[in-house]
Length: 77
Picture 1 (tube, rainbow, N blue to C red):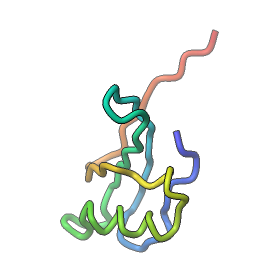
Picture 2 (picture 1 turned 180 degrees about the horizontal axis):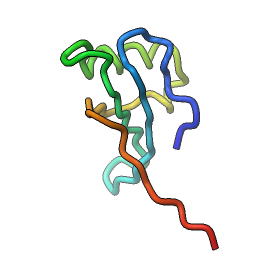
Picture 3 (picture 1 turned 90 degrees about the horizontal axis):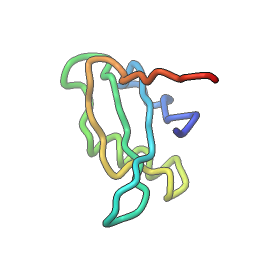
Picture 4 (picture 1 turned 120 degrees about the vertical axis):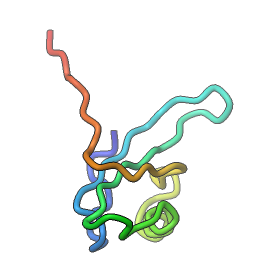
């Protein structure tokens, strides 16, 4: 998980990203964005913004516009 997703762009109300492993291309970054208002931001805008702000390996190859951010349970042993 990338700890500091880009949030300085004014259009998303929140954002997160995660890294997934794929057999065909190794690890890929997927971004999740909650727009400030419906239809106010596109996947292309997010990827372009990230490309200008982040190291190339941190730029998402996929972006999903969501109503709320996905959450995972963390199990402590």
